[in-house]
Amino acid sequence: MTLLFVFNSVLLGVGLAMDAFSVSLANGLNEPEMRRRRMCLMAGTFAFYQYAMPMIGWLCVHTIAERFEAFQKFIPWIALALLGYIGGKMLIEGIRGGEEAEETDVKVSFGELMVQGVATSIDALSVGFAIADYSVGMALICGLIIAIVTFVICIVGLSIGKKAGSHLAGKASILGGVILIAIGIEIFAKAFL
Image (cartoon, rainbow, N blue to C red; front, side, top):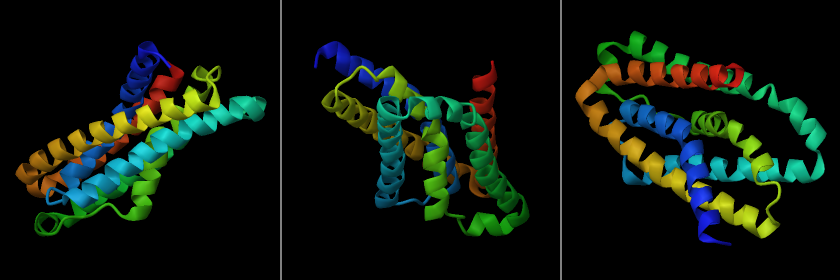
């Protein structure tokens, strides 16, 4: 393990965490009164998935690589569907809620958080190919570094979103939904451009 290995792992973490950062920003907008414990739960969820997906990809490369390659073409469709669904739901709740949404925050449920975690990290499966030549120990350390970077970036996104969300009041859910849908479209578009 060298300094270059750590640096590359941090860069992978930053690159992979951008979608999770954007979703964290939207979640912070949606819940401006979010407590630290909930922020850590959300950031931890994204970090867990950003750790698990490259490890699953690495394992697939070393076991069932042919099947994984066939699955890769569906990744953008899955991310678009998952983020579109959650974003659409937030958007509709924000539009329907109107003045009621200003009084009560619409919190992201545990199930929705899990879906967000999968949707923002599913493209990290392909990182397993990039780290395929790593030993088991190096792959685990790389995944851990990615998770730590993701956690920090998501905490920053949640904090920024909370501050902006308290100023936007009832419109935060609408903005958060639009952001999630845009992230889904961006992941989808990146795959075909």
